[in-house]
Amino acid sequence: MKTLSSRNLESINTDEDNIMDDKTYPDVKSMIRDLTDDTELIDAVNDAMDRQAIVRQLLAMRAARGLSQSDIAETMDCSQSRVSKMESSADDDLRYGDMREYARAVGCELKSGVRPKQLTPADEVKALAFAVNDRLSRMADLSQCDEKIAEGVTQFFIEAFLNFSIIIGRAASTLPQKPDGSPRIEVSIRRNRARDCPEDSPSNEQSQHDVAAHTHG
Amino acid sequence: MWTQSPTDMFRKRVKRWPKKYKRELGAMMANLQTVVMSLNQGAKVESLLFGFVHHEPGGVLALDQKGGGVGLKQTRLYVYPQKAQEVLHIITIGDKGSQNDDIRDAKNFVDGVRAGKERDEDTQ
Image (cartoon, rainbow over all chains, first blue to last red; front, top):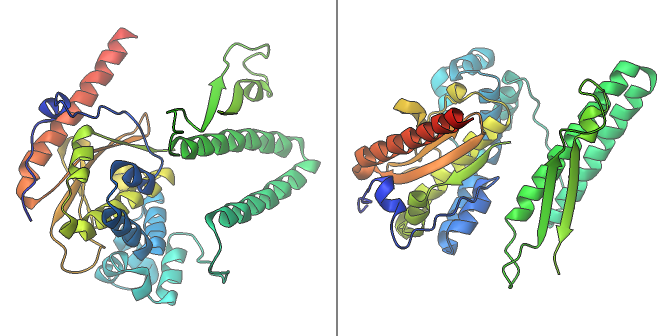
């Protein structure tokens, strides 16, 4: 491989062909799609992502729980090197039972199912939205008989609403611009600090945010 | 929620990345996605104890191509997690031959980010 020449960042930032774009990305795929037109490179990234889709989720859960490979090995009653091998394997090369054991070791459960192959991304989002709707309804039911739970659920609903808005806003920002250079959708979330509600009011948080989505043209 | 902020250096190197090492690029990007997922799940940077993560001085993480299959060339992707802002700076990407320069560039970048943060705090 030809060695990639390295220059310090200061000199790079003053190049004439400098891009100087502070754009941020919510995920790797959208970043790569934006940075290169080379379909071979984009396909290679997608293939690598698919290769370890389940393994990656297991790794993320291990890190989130602050567990080491040795911790997992102890729970699974196997060697640390076996866990290491599992973590660098493709999903297809792992035994279902091993994945299930690993999931248990990180306090999760492995769920599997069968679904139509031709499910589109839009169908998947709809299915997830139905699942979210189901869980939110369950939480609302739980809050019927207890004021404290109702307050907690209310707060959670507000946070969920804001987070979903942010997620949609970030995804929308990765859409290609319109031919005239304008964005297709703009999602803005404005935090209003000085409203009528006092600081310690339970409804204060609710009144502190305005969320708006605009389409152009 | 963490976002990724690529530097101009990284952007340029991706644009010039050799096709014959596309699998290495794919593997590093998949590993980057694992890091992003972990951070979004609430993992601490210190808990990112994966075989493909190398903790460099100054808080820089070097992600290699492990997990991408056999016969891949040794390559590295250098990132810096800015915890308070939940921004993962994607600094640069290279191979063994450019490793020393890449680490130096990554360190310079982090020094710049930290100096900027201190300036911001002084002016507040």
